[in-house]
Length: 493
Image (tube, rainbow, N blue to C red; front, side):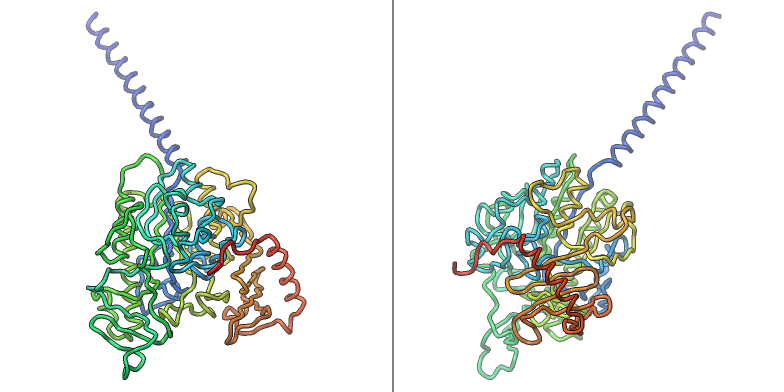
């Protein structure tokens, strides 16, 4: 009897221990799930350079397959009216990374060459970047690629919120070092040798005079840097940037990450690897080199997406993809169809860009969102997801997009969007847009008026038939413009 009772007691106690252990593990699992649900998401911001609105498969281009970039639209949201704050590289990036119209702090112009070293040409130290914001929320922050927000030490990415940096500081860079082996280069030259007609080939370099200028010396005083240390990068630059991004993504870490991956493709100089052009042999050499660059870019983004999946990070990583401005079609063939204009002006082709968001399990898949949004929204969105309030005391020009894209918040993120690039100005309010693009051709020194719902191509100027609407929008633009300041630097000043 004693041993029977003892055994029964042991079994009962063991069962109680098992139940306690079971419920403990269960509660632990619930706690883990709750933690995972509340965990701050990783944020991957991919910016490409000079890619026109019409150059992706998901945007209607069937000539150059871009299946990996297109998958972001398939698995996420395509923003059909996604804008940037300027149609040039540097001011556009300033607006993106600060969440503010760059004209609020005087970063209105686009430094090139030696002007990148001007002490006032960089992002003002008074401005807080998205990297500053997320770092304060406990994020590991990294940047790979093109900076173009100042070439001085104070403007260096490592002084602007980034823990790690690999890339270059100025507006452009050759994709391989001289003598440009392994690629076909299509380079601008103001004057070709006597007897050459439009193009002249010298080995694996095709020179063209169709732009009337020379290819800029992009690499002059502008080395590739790891942190602050210069190096010679022999790998094709798009591939090298992906290599560095993968190294960042694969690092074991306990805190969330923010990676700003700023490819310089498809910006000039036009240089494509021969293997990336094989599928485009039927295209003119100008278009063929561009196609090879875009195809290579898509392959590299595919590697990024594959790694996120392998690391089981897809459902906890918000991916944002956009171009910094519209395509310079004449220079690169980068198409903005069906939009008018391109890089450097404020018609839709200059400021409306490919804009995609993917966050699996959180954002709807395959959704097209047509209400206007703008790149300043990324700062506000990242801030909301990180739990850090946007900075106080300064006007912010973005909103958190997530509730709009999920349908939790109805209505439009923005009623009015504003642009100024020196004497080029624009404003969109609802479906109406005014734009002023002085500079020759069909451009005007006076505001033009368009109804974008009925005339996306901006082909019918309604300024004379709707003078009241023109006057109304002009007054709104002037009121907003009073909030801005003059450029804090200008060339040769």
